[in-house]
Length: 229
Ligand code: SF4
Picture 1: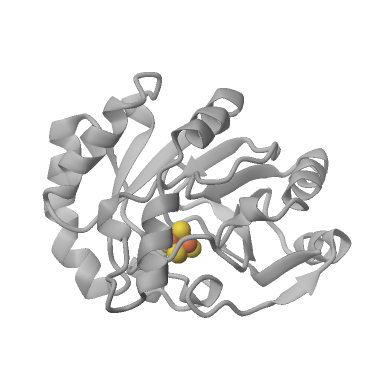
Picture 2: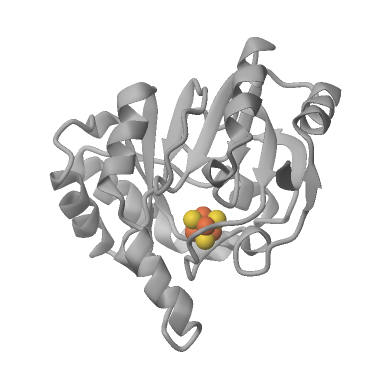
């Protein structure tokens, strides 16, 4: 079974396919606990129900977009993602899998969209001692990143909260000479329109200076991170 938080149609809000009409299949459950998680209903307080692959495919068929984004939570925690993504592809969908890059599965994807979690993502010990430690232990899995990018087209999206986070991205990338910088996107840490507006300018400039791409977060610009968009 797949554990599903929501399936809906909207536009892709981040990265290379920003603005593309897409169906989002959002699994629930995550092995990490970013303090800034913008989908806490899949991580800190997971919600959703068990659905068969057939139920998910039937719901996708009711909607109307070629692009399907399999996201979470952490979708690669679920073994059923492998047959689900293969079937979506065989039905003619362009499949993007969004992952934090800590779990490997042989999913089928036209784009593996990886959002590695830097030290700036770790929750405080005050919020949760257990999750602070577990998150820190799990968030960086270089061997998983290598397996994911060796098999499939990829993009990397890094959440940037403060100016010194850009140096952390450089440090992280120094461990992966094989990653193409053109496929690296910086995006603001934001869950509200105001937060996004404050950070957009300096992160856009920092991306330009460093040779990275900048991505806003269209769904926050348009809907203020309301669920189902
Ligand atoms: S990896 Fe993604 S879903 Fe999991 S806690 Fe971090 S932001 Fe939330």
